[in-house]
Length: 205
Image (cartoon, rainbow, N blue to C red):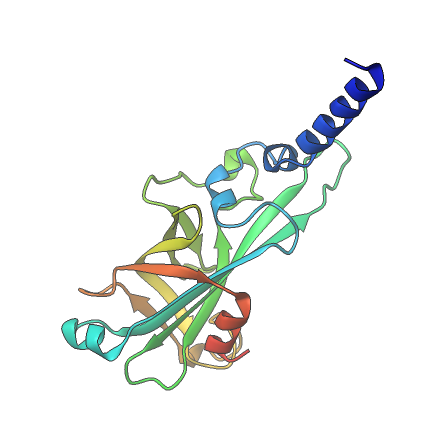
């Protein structure tokens, strides 16, 4: 083969390899839960949103279901290393909203998924039932699993502190905060991926 063509092919191969998703995540910190990558790539400001609305027919068939619509957005935040020898860390923040029967607006909250930036020795035990997305100050949380290559998100609800006010549950008006618990028909939700604008419209942003 011509030497020039050989060098060109090698250069193209190197460029493809350098920009592949696998190597793009090569700077992940030790102990990073790689299941998070199915939610969103470890890239600053990367975002994935999911939203499910239930029609009247479904709600009639499940009269004990309190949730009329439910959504979540996961946004990645890059945390630069404090020392040159430290790895880059990525925080997976989430916004959560649920429209409940009898309430005009969605109740909302937020927190962090997977404790991606926490040093390995300080991370909580992982579960095969999904990634934990939790709210600070014992605000509970949800467990999430990406399905169909990230096209859908399975959400398991146990207990999560939400707010019916203007802000999140940890802001000033605690009187508007309450626990949303997984009832008989409100424990598992399968949500399709949507554009971020659809989620923002849902929560009124």
